[in-house]
Length: 447
Image (cartoon, rainbow, N blue to C red; front, side, top):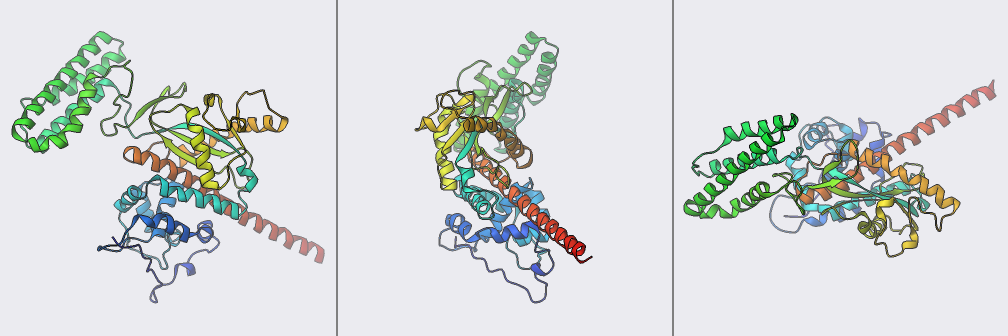
């Protein structure tokens, strides 16, 4: 694959985009502030020399990823809106309005897989650089930060033993059908009825009957696994490599119990999902992965920008993630924070300098200024709410642990660029108000 080249140029037969759009639009202003050369240097390194069609320009794909998470759009909706929005096209580097799409929806998936979390972190770094350059974020705002963790839920149904067992039966039967294996019995009809009855009996608090139906489901799943094992070993041993992962998941589903220790299977299409309890009354348990987030503890002019966002798997203790979070903040901002404010879940943290960390409710070593900052620690909670509700962290649709890490970084970058767009809107509105007041004063003085 050759290096990406941006050969887009103006067309003499069509008007340029900068002649048909408002150059004071916040997206246009933001596109002029972003250092696209820096992003091309960081993101374009995934391509090496060799034969093949030249890849798409880095600015196009980086702009698409920013717009997707800035406006909370799916890949399909983003593709459709890009074809009809001249501001989206200008932001992505187009010279003239295009009625055809230079990319496919699957291009976004391939780019995300190639880039990974480390390269995509350049979007967060660039958003913070633009914020400092435009005055939305000052250097002193980076000295005191708040760090907290949340759960990034995966796009999975609520797991129950009956649903998982029924789903395993369906997947095994589909695998056998796709590969031409003739089963003694598929159990699809009776398994569906048993899964329905488990739900009904559980709702009626008839747990003995529910357990009887669940045992029926697990017995049929075990029979199905044994039948496919015999058929694969005798007729199609070449299928063993593809059948092995599905068989292992099905065996785990059939053997796991409610109170067992260790990792369990909560979804067959996303086996990496973890069960995390956060103590919420409305949702005692959430299924996904833990994410660490950091914001300034002060009140920057442009809003509370996200300084760090990272997905953490295996459900680590919050205190054991603090040192890594502080190191990531320094990598994104170029400055190590002087004070870090956390909640009581970080007691026993692993930060090398414990005197830089203040825990909620701490009495020793506190001053009036520090107490005032400790009250501001809770300001990180609404930021986490915005990340989930408006920037695609509330339900992660990307596949695997790789997708968990990518989605957390892109959600933070989209939130930061959204704040920058709002900052430019406020600046332009303030400028118009100042001009209007000046004109009114001029008229008053002339009269």
